[in-house]
Image (cartoon, rainbow, N blue to C red):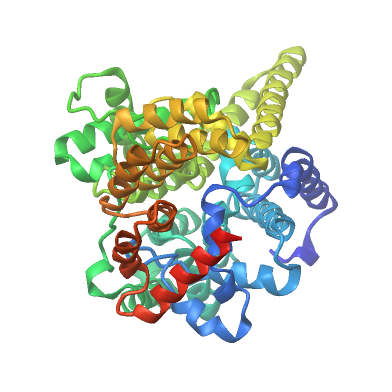
Length: 538
């Protein structure tokens, strides 16, 4: 469906999407680089240099240990730096525009496949306002989710076209979707289901008809994994290396991981429909690991999981919309569920971005069918009014939630309230109080984080800073050393420990730790110490 062939109604609907996105999420344009966005700033030298585009394309997503390869997302940041400068405004603007294009393509895809423009419009409208999406839109790092869905929809549009499928475009869209985020691999089975719905059958003739197109999809996916192997190497090709903080499910037994994952799945469903207590952090130990299958959350998650898979097959002939919505929902969720295999995080609202499209389509289809069955005009008005009220409440909730993401102080202090048992949230809150100069409150938060589990290197370092500023040097030293003993030590702890020793005139101890920063470079170590001592005298 070409944009040039859109009807007046189509353009009105698309205009509504544009208006709502900038009204609800436009305040993010005033936002800063926050949370995971810091990785963009840290890699600015590479991302902002067009001459390094080859390096960027083959670069792991921030680090090899993370086990992530997302060239589409990294290249989008390069485009940002090249055309819109280095400030956060341009990055937020591109996020909003990408969200708008994604919503517009969702509308066109559903309309093309099912020939129902109002179903397509209201599905997109519900998807657009869902408060659980605020993290993806407001957080620049959430661009991975948007791009993965955008290119997945472009691939689906190729397969639902009445014209001959363009094999090169199909291959490109699939590669770019998975290259934005690995979980977009779900588009491969979703395309097959969409094809079945389009043709109304699955037989040898259909397979022959679309063989080259399906082959292009597979090649696009394989090409991504081929490049991924050379980017990450054999050690990290399939593995994810992370800490207990990010995902405790990696460090527990399989049964406990599955039980907890189903419980988290139910939490996602709750927060999608009833968006209270949305949070930027669910890390250790906000969601305790459980090995009890017979709790309400785990049972409900399991029932919905099995139910969604069943709906794909039960309704694929009778009600294909239900089948497609279930397939989008569950197939895009499985790769991020921690059920079949652990991923890099225990939970995150951003992980429901792709799956929520399936939820939106299924819910709107049910509402749409109920509305058509109403015979009384007043009943129809009341029904439609209730639906518009719900959409409005979601939109207002999203608008309010956006404010939290405009700067790190708001974000971290908000997370302290919604994730009070998280090491990361309490540590980040402590860092904010430290920056304010409120040492007592900073110490309280950081000590609480340490009491949950003394494993977060940056948090331990910041607690050391508190004691250093209070003149308690021995405690500061112990905490800096403890921070450096962690599996992923915070580099700033080296510098702080070195400065502590230099302040106390312990030159040999300072040299010992400087060896970690400048290995086998005695000249640099001596020059650094000399420079520090001269500046300290002044």
